Length: 152
Figure 1 (tube, one colour):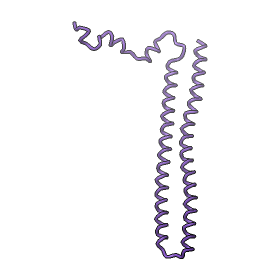
Figure 2 (spheres, helix red, strand yellow):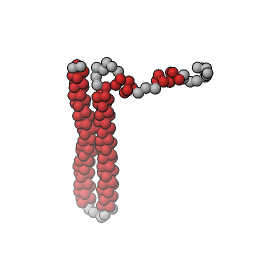
Figure 3 (spheres, one colour):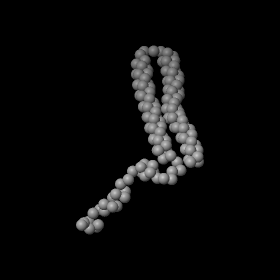
Figure 4 (cartoon, helix red, strand yellow):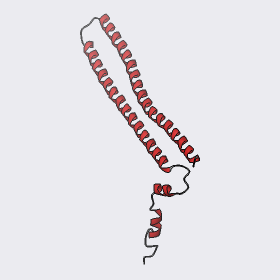
């Protein structure tokens, strides 16, 4: 027979910890709540968190894609401005062109900023909607579980 000090865990002790919590709770005679319903609710919570996370990631990706498009467009506009600057124009025409370019650049920057903010807000709202819906469902489930437990 092996000495208990030689084995990391005796066979009896190992068997004590080899049980399934779900089985233990379902076999438990006094159950104030339906354990399987609580576990199902927890799974739905995790599914809602996963869905909300996916929506948030998709939103971040959409913002990043749009920012890249805006950066490309800005570089194209700057290239066009540089091409115009090397053209022979009178000082008045050059000032008028530069003023118009500055005005357009400011308007585009503001529009792009609003667009990025709207994309980010939509992603956040979509994720929050999923979590809010699940929170309401969870509270309804909890109310139902406590009613059924009180009726036992």
